[in-house]
Amino acid sequence: MDFKEHVVKKIVDITGLDSETAMKSVEIPPDEKMGDLAFPCFPLAKVLRKAPPVIAQELAGKLSDDDIIDRVEAVGGYLNFFFNREIFIRETVTAIQSAGNEWGKSDVGGGRTVLVEYSSPNIAKPFHIGHLFSTALGNSLAKIYSYLGYNVQSLNHLGDWGTQFGKLISAYKRWGDKAVIEKNPIQELLKIYVKFHEEAEKHPEFEDEARDYFKKLEDGDKETTDLWKYFREISLVEFNRVYDILGVKFDSYNGEAFYSDKMDEVVDILRDKNLLVESDGAQVVDLSDLNMPPCIILKSNGATIYATRDIAAALYRRRTYNFYKNIYVVGTPQALHFKQLFSVMKKAGWEWADDCVHVGFGLVRFDGKNLSTRHGDIVYLDDVLNESIEKTREIIEQNNSAVDDKETAAKKIGIGAVLYTFLKNSREKDIDLSWDTMLDFEGESAPYCQYGYARGRSILRKAEGIDYSDADFAKAVSGETYSLVKQLNAFGDAVKDAAEKNEPFYVNRYVTNLTKAFNKFYNTNPIMKEDVDMDTKKARLAIVDVTTKVIKTALGLLGIETVESM
Ligand code: ARG
Image (cartoon, rainbow, N blue to C red; front, side):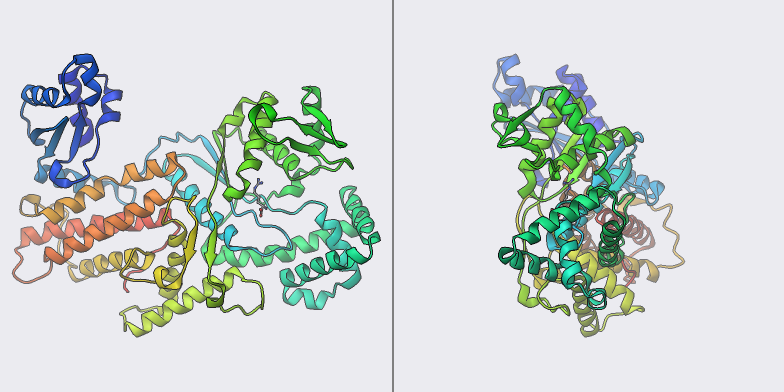
C-alpha cells in the first residue's frame, strides 16, 4: 500500500490534474501537526480564478471518506491529509518485514551502467584528505546506485602519467636509494622530487634530462618503464592500505597512463572537426563563446596534458561501457577543468557529453597538530584512520561497554566515524574535521547511529523466543511510534534523492533522523518491562526489528558497518 499514491489518486479525482503533476506537488508538511501530506492549492488559483484558501475549502468538501485517510483539513491554501495511524503502522511494518534486508531497494536503474570515478590519487604523491573525501563520497554513491538497480563500475583514475615522471626518474637516478625508499615510499619519492626542483634551478640542464626521460617513457623504453612501474607499484601498496581499512574496492585502476596511446585519435578528431587553433604555439580549443578559457590539448612542445588524457578516457569509457552516466567525484577546485572537458566533447559532437557529471566537493581542514603521524611531516591517511580506531577503543574501554570483540568494534566504529563526517553535509560545503564531533557518541555521528542499532539488537536478544511475526498494531499507536514508522517509510525516497542529486548526505541525514526517532520511541514506549502486555510487546518488538534492519541498510549505503553490541 503506497499512501502517497493513494492521496495523489484522490487529488486527481477532485482536481482533474494529471497524476504526474499531482505527484510532484504533494509535500510533506514541515510540522507533523499539519498532517502527513499536504497539497498546496496555489498553482490552481490562476486557472480557477479563486483564492487558494477558497479552493482548499471547496476541495476538502468534495473528498469522500475512506479507511486510509483519517481526515482532511483545509488550512490556508493547503489541503492537509492525516493518515489512519494504525493502518499506516501496520502496512509499513509488514511491508518492511517482507522486504527483509531490501527495504527501499528499487530497480529504477534497470541495469543501466553508471560509472563512478573516485579517489584517483597521484602516484608518488601523498594520498591526501581530499582523496579521502572523494573516496567516501564515491564509495557511497556506488552503493546507492547499485541499490537502485544500476550496474555500477567503480573507477580509480590514477594520476600516473605526465612530465613529472621524467623529473622523478631523473631524480631517482641521481639520488634514489632503494632501501630508504622501500621503507617510506611516498615520503621518499616526494623528497627527491622536491630536491629535483631545487637543484634544477641551479642546473637548468636537469630539466632537459627530465624531458628526455619522459620522452623515453612515452616511447616505451624498457629501463624507464620499469622504473615507472616500480613507482606505481609501491605507491599502490600505500593506497591499498587505506582502501583495505575502508573496505573499498575498484573495478578498474586504469589511470592516466592507460590513455597515453589513445590520445592521438582524440587530437585527430578535434583537428578534423576544425576545433584546434594555435595559441602561443600550443593547440587549444577555443571556448570563448562559452566564457571559458581555452582548453589546451597539445602543449607547444607537442606533449599532451591532463585534459587531453581526460578526453581520451571519456571516449574510451563511452565505447567500453556505453554508460548511462559517467560520474567524476573530484574536488570543486577542478570544476572549470570538467566544464571545459565537457564543452570540448560537446563541440566534437559527442551528445553523450551531457551524461558526464562532475560531482564536486569542498575543502577539508584538519587540525594537523591533533594528528600523530609516524612518518613525520606528511599526514598519512591510514594514520588518521588508525588514530580514529585507537581513540574509539579508548572510549569503549572507558564506557565499560558490553562489546565482545573490542578490536573489531573499535574498527567499525572508528572508520564509520570518519566516513560519516564526510557525508554529513551537502558535499560542496567545506568541512572541519575534529575528533570531538566525529566521536561524539551522543551527537550526530556514526557512533550515535551504530549505538541505536546496537540498542535495538540487544532488546531483540532479550526477547528471544517471542514470535512477533504476527503482531497486532492496534495497541502500538503512540505518537513516537507513528513518527518512527513515518521515518521508516521514507527510506526509499532518501535513497532516490541521494542518487538524483549525487548527495549521499540525504541518506546520512535520513539514518540520523531515523535513529533519533528510534531513541525517542524506545525511551517512551517500554518494550521488555514486565507490565507491558504481550500484544503491545509483540508490536513494539516488530518495530524494533524492522528499524534495526533499516538502520543497518542505510549505514551500509554510506559504507559504514554496524556492531551487535556497544
Ligand atoms: N589525480 C587527480 C588529483 O589528485 C584527480 C583525478 C580526477 N579525475 C579525472 N578524471 N581528472 O587531483
